[in-house]
Image (cartoon, rainbow, N blue to C red; front, side):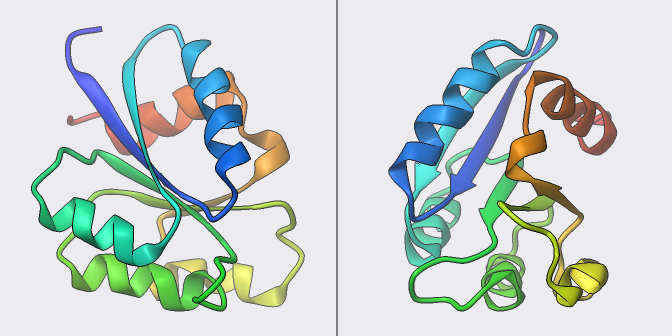
Length: 129
């Protein structure tokens, strides 16, 4: 655990932060710091502030943005070049098949977001970090 990985969760349900924080504490091979924003605007402000962000986990549906097809491009336009994962309670909508077209690197069902999956994603997308 040499370097801290900074994960930004963007989700309009504060309970998701509590659930993810619990899962992150169980990841053994990474030191993880979790930041949380309820809106894309708050996430954009955090990124613009220069706060460290290694990876963004973006909820598919937020209150003001219809879905990730609008929110993820805003994060990319703000200059974030790290991995962005879209998380959702359902990946059934057809637009999830083209998630890369909107700047997302991966998609994951929230039910699958466990310590093993988190560690795999960190190894896969932050191996050079």
